[in-house]
Amino acid sequence: MSRDLQPLGDCIGTDTNGFLQKTVSRDTVQPELLPLIQQIIETATSVFGDNLHSLYVRGSVAKSTFIPNISDLDTVVVTRTDCGDESEQSYIESVKKIELGYPEVHGIEKGIRTVKEFVDSGNPIFKYQTVCVYGDDLAERMPVMKPGKDTTVHLPKVLERLGAAQKSVPDMSKERLQSYSIWICKQAIRSCHELLAEQLQQFARDIYPCYKAAADAWPDQEPLLRQTAEVAIFGTQDKDELLEIINQIKSLLEPKIHKFYRYSDHA
Image (cartoon, rainbow, N blue to C red; front, side):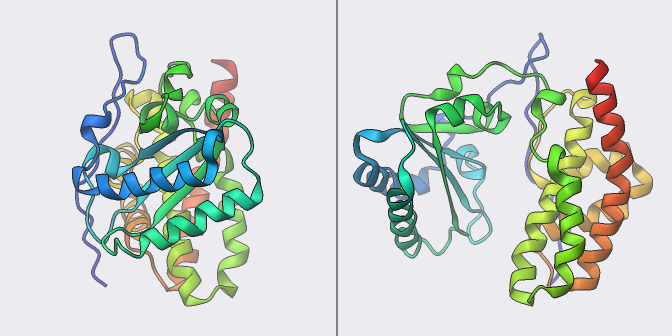
């Protein structure tokens, strides 16, 4: 497969006080996928009943940048109390059936959180990149954030995950490797941007902006960063290629992450 890294995606900027600004709303949700979203809402209402507090979409669908056959639909259901394994499994299986009617959607993420878990998470994705499509918007209860140590999502665990990947990749099947390579390279390239977020005064998860910011900051690492970004989008079934990326990106990130947390602890 040819890899054509397109300059797609964007960053969240800051206001005059340095706080991130939310740019998604119900008005920005992909209109073509509203029927699918409505089906998911109806399913969640049926399964969780009065325990359902709210439901959110995020990612490309929230920004109307959905690309058929490439983009997925990221959803988060929020329940008032823990829903239990039976209800959770019932919801997941029901949404899997809905997926079959939308082949242009590259999967549906079926996140489930309680109100407390959502609000207390401190997750900038929940605060700034989700759109509430049902219920009361809990993002409004979360404190405002500045780019930097407040907005690290992948950074705290990326070295541990890269280390685990070094051990597990050699024994993976090609089918597993394809999806795993996308996941681990997304973790890595987004972590690169998180290291630079305070300096850039922005937050990003889209792959191209994360790659571009890191390549501009570390131009000698551009080939590695580009390859990581390409695999984050297209995946690979080549174990040697993935292991080389993992080894090199871990070596790049390790000293930078240690320095980042030393600085953050004293900031």
